[in-house]
Length: 198
Image (tube, helix red, strand yellow):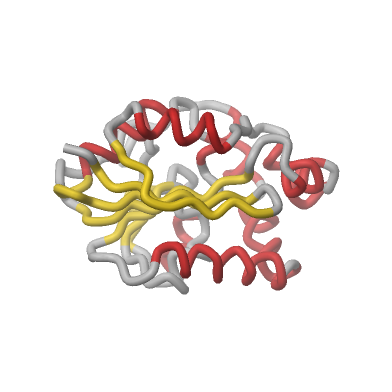
């Protein structure tokens, strides 16, 4: 079993795993809207696909993603029940061999990363040549971030989040070896698609 860092976001997801998963049941319109946009952005992607921060598998399942990295054991067990093969670990140190996956997906996990640059370097390592990276995130100062922070169901988690602007995220990912291919940013929910640059 991987040795995981003992920092606050992981503790919150360990403690409130059921509450996290229940949000998707209680807010189907928001969830399904985000899922639809991610599906469109991803399109038909080459497999195998890895999701970093797979959570309870609410996105990976419908997107037919079979592998997920997740530090929270309770959330990982939920994802496993949804058919996801769980790799317990963190994005900053992905415990898989180099050039293993053709696509890596990150959905609303960027704001919880302890080391985003380290994570994108790891993504570059585990992607095959000309691999695809899809990053969906809640944008700093956007409508969604401002709304969620005031609500107890999401605020429990997002109060520990570090938000970024679209420009900051693009710059961060490009300096770690990627080329931006498309961007869909609406209502403070951004979906960026990159290709690995050798």
